[in-house]
Image (cartoon, rainbow, N blue to C red):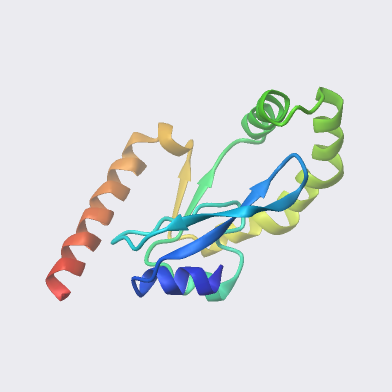
Amino acid sequence: MKEHINSLIHGIEVNIPIYDFSTHTRKKETQSVEKHRIIILEGILALFHQDIRDMMDIKIYVETADDIRIIRRIKRDIEKRDRTFSSVIEQYYKTVRPMHIQFVEPTKKYADIIIPEGGRNKVAVDILRTKIRTLIINHKNAT
């Protein structure tokens, strides 16, 4: 990931792996990502590694209540990943919840901005929109 992000920052196209959630493996196919002025790195462990954090202009942690997260997981895993309710709950208690507490929750301290309620937080979205526009303008002026 570090190499891919570095390549994108320097305007080089990359081919990123595609994960198959039904087999828990990477697919042979990849997805091509071309250079862009703005790169958004999204994921529950996006703030985990310092080398990756150091490449970011803005570090954002989207905070979602536990009950909302589990309901979304149940709905997604049953509808899109062909899992049973009991298998989702078992996985949640055995691995998802403990891993969230141990690895994801602590990364909040590295965030520049913590957004409660995600996209429903209109004030936070507005602040981000303004900051991204400023970064684009500053980048244009620097080149």
